[in-house]
Amino acid sequence: MAKQARAVQTWRSIVDAAASVFDDYGYERAAISEILRRANVTKGALYFHFASKEAIAQAIMDEQTSTVVFEQEGSPLQSLVDGGQQFAFALRHNAMARAGTRLSIEGVFLGGPHPWGDWIDATARMLELGQERGEVFPQIDPMVSAKIIVASFTGIQLVSEADSGRADLREQVAEMWRHILPSIAHPGVIAHIKPEGRVDLAAQAREKAEREEREARAAAEGRGAGSDPASNAGSRAGGAEMRSGGTGSRADEGEEEPAGAGVAAGGSV
Image (cartoon, rainbow, N blue to C red; front, side, top):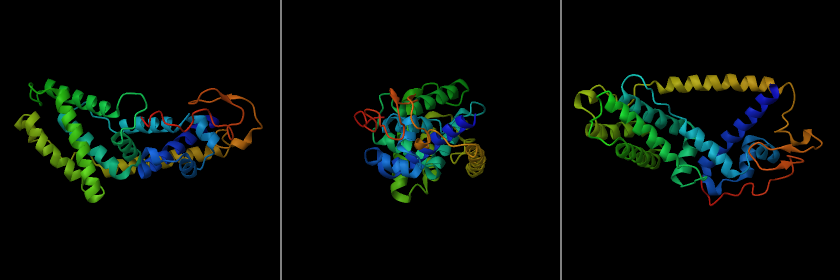
């Protein structure tokens, strides 16, 4: 159990470090060596968990698309607004959200569905729910409107980043909703929508930080019971072991790099 917890912590360290590197440099210029330095793990540990830089980027994209969960109870439109403001907050305070967004904007694909598709589908579902509950005009095409909303948010966050380092992003997103809502929702509904969001994002961030601190302490206590075979390549004399996330086997995870590791397939996510 302690070994599994250490492996999870190593995976987490690599993904967090990679997010900060992708955020700073983008996909093409991000170096595996810099990810290793920031994560403080060996090359063997990294390739134990990930077959390539592509695979790390995919993990970040997956994390980014799970940043926001739209509430299904109450007003669907307010939940949609709250979700947008929650992600705007994440872009200001979370390297994972920024890295995932940058990878998406750079057009980095890994052979899977485009990440914008996840956001568009989730937005369209909330608009459909809004139609069912009488908030959204019945003649509105949810998919078309969802694409417009996601595209608008993407452009606004880029402009906000250039203008103020995203310091004004919350107000800019609120302004976006003030312009979009009249075209999709009944006036009586709009009167009750808060474009700035109704969620105490700062309190949520504090809660998350406290939770992560507790998890980090628990992981540190677990590491005290022994060394992580994935993060300390020199702890084993040898022996073949299958790599999770890579291909084939390796005799010494601290030395052998798998074929094709670190090479992007067309630079795509």
